[in-house]
Length: 141
Image (tube, rainbow, N blue to C red; front, side, top):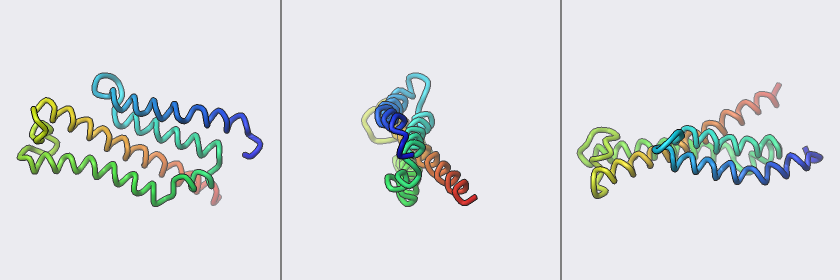
């Protein structure tokens, strides 16, 4: 892969824009198509593009297996944490309006956005893990 200067240069230019687009999809998911799952897939795809262009060893230096596990766990903890916070506030699991964040409308908005962030983080982590596990299987064969 050392001789693939064009693909590496294009990847270096595109990856920040792909990640920015993932944040856009995450932020506007409640108003249009998109949300946490789609943003997580797009963000994971940006990191997979990096690994494809620069090699699996360089990709593992950037994101270790432990870091991938932390990313997946963090996303799930955010999701579950918001649900548990709703229970502590006296509502049902993921009843955002029960959160003590001012008005029920604001609490619902922030609760849904927090859930979308958690889902996006978890999906990106799972996508990266699946890619690395698949690439490892191919290396072993």
